[in-house]
Length: 229
Image (cartoon, rainbow, N blue to C red):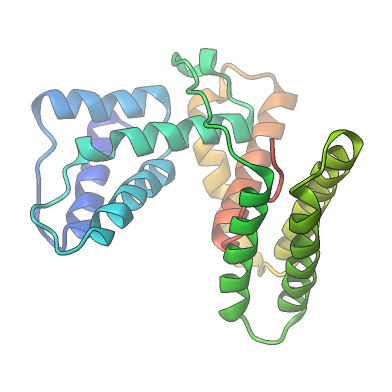
């Protein structure tokens, strides 16, 4: 996408988040946002970063001022780093150094996943996907208890089981897709990878598109990442 058009899309999205209050992206801020376009930050990732910042901002109480795009930069770039790792685009490909990840505990990670899946289950009817969510939540609850003291081989086994559960949930979500949604997500995945495609061999490009599709599928279904690094 042309950087100027990219900025207009960000500007319009932020306007909607600010309930119609338009803040023009000009001067140094324009250069900053066009830099996102040049790096290859997908619009969907930028929008999610804006959403993430706004959620924290609104949680603090009544708004005192409209959100400006530069306030969202840290969230956008952190999510872009996550996206690059997920789809296999290296920091060298985009010209930036990947940010470090904060340490996290395995029990806390599992507990957050349980909370997300429980909330997701509440929004579904009695279908096969809901039944699968119930099964996974029950197993995660058992894994959380054993993970608190797990070391060595026991911890490795838990990590491997989380990877397997994550893959199984994604397979269930993929099976539940209608053809229209499947085609839309595939087209979005192709679009996300397009800025990097010319520098990637065919096999790597195909893998990156599939990884982008999986990320979009995860977001569309509201699934947390169960695997833990």
